[in-house]
Length: 207
Image (cartoon, rainbow, N blue to C red):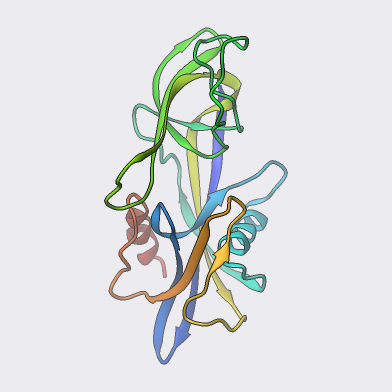
């Protein structure tokens, strides 16, 4: 198995009319989120967090104000993380039938067991959050051990931007989803999906 998968989270903040605002975005199926993602091979943390801001909002002129710390391991007991985008097989054998959809790097999955060179996992994805109406993916299968991580470390950064934006806008993501970034007051705390709401508690003590 692989070791640690590094994650970054961007708290992009501005002040308008004496009110501090946080940049979040509405994902069409996964709810309201803070800007975040997975560090790619060869990236440092600072490059990764700026890339994630660009990919999820389109903003290019952002500057890091401070590193706010990290969660050493976000994985719960019974969870693993996909360390490299991987095929999932119906049996613990590279010659077994694979699922059509691959699991991408950075996804958290449920861990069931390990058998020699493979890990038995499951992953479920719904059509929307909150209040889903159907299941989009329900994958239960075997993944090569080298593509599974056992720790997920999340790093938090405070950033600002000099780019002028509207209060809300739309952006087409690389998977065809339409994201809606928007600014929301820091107080009261924004209504963010779980477990990202815990990120707010951690960061609010530092900004």
